[in-house]
Length: 399
Ligand SMILES: Cc1cc2nc3c(=O)[nH]c(=O)nc-3n(C[C@H](O)[C@H](O)[C@H](O)COP(=O)(O)OP(=O)(O)OC[C@H]3O[C@@H](n4cnc5c(N)ncnc54)[C@H](O)[C@@H]3O)c2cc1C
Image (cartoon, rainbow, N blue to C red):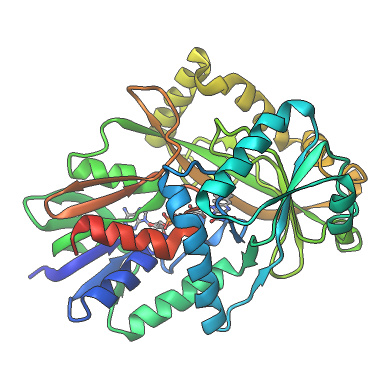
């Protein structure tokens, strides 16, 4: 006899866990299970990110990201404080180092105003008081509410609390297909459900296709690799130093983050990758998946969609430390090559491309059938958004 649950959540990353917490609150008697293909929670994006609680300044007010970022950050920080998890409200600066970035600075300030986010324009002198080693700027933005958090501790505590409240976690359980009404195929055999929520991160589009959804999207993974500042040189960064981003891209550009442990990370890159879990050079490359992704990337390169050639050349070059250093020095000119030491920290951003419009999808996408909800394109800052986004997912699911 297959196991049967009222609600199944697929994926034990931040989205699956916060959705489970929300559902437990709404339906405490429901038999709720979280299915996760790995042996523990948070082994992918949710355990490999920069750990920054973003303010929400990058996102236009009509986006899901803007709606959930500031409130999600507040709730995540409250959760961390209540659970004794390390979190630090350290603020961040966004540096405009060239005149042509000024229109984007204006746009970010408008976003801040419309999204109710605290942000102020500062000059070089004020910047020097906050970050004495940062590059000279044309202008800068100071966001006092940006925080850093121990994201793995958040994931683990959420998992523990849910398990203690009766949520069944089934690890090493990969969902491989769906058939009929209310049954999925998994590596543990067939499992039944009343309602299923797909929070499978980099594989959410694959799962959605088992339910006849997501045909309009193709996935292109981007690899984020980091360097770390050596201990003697990490005094050069007090908190978070970011560049003005290219707002047509869902990436923020190489930046400096003093993470919760006190270490300073530089990165991440957005290097086109050949697999959804291609964390190393060859790790996570599989023939059929890599072929599909490779064809997708080749098409984007050929058609130069979203200025993809420039992005690809610039980012691929960052496999070389010297090129990485050039990008990092735009924010921190005194950085020396010996200041940067290797780290194995790497993450993958599972970015969806709309195959009809040929554009990168910039926001979260919810797609549903009668008995299932699929969370697609849960890209940054989905960690920050977690608790608030989960409410919306549960509302849309009608649970
Ligand atoms: C380099 C990098 C830096 C980032 N920095 C930040 C940041 O500073 N702040 C921020 O807010 N966000 C940041 N993000 C984004 C953030 O980490 C992600 O948006 C968020 O973690 C996504 O959560 P998720 O639960 O959707 O995905 P995941 O954490 O990837 O979880 C999905 C889970 O589903 C499981 N799964 C997949 N397929 C199946 C299957 N078939 N069966 C069963 N289980 C399955 C996976 O094993 C995984 O555990 C960053 C991301 C990256 C890559």
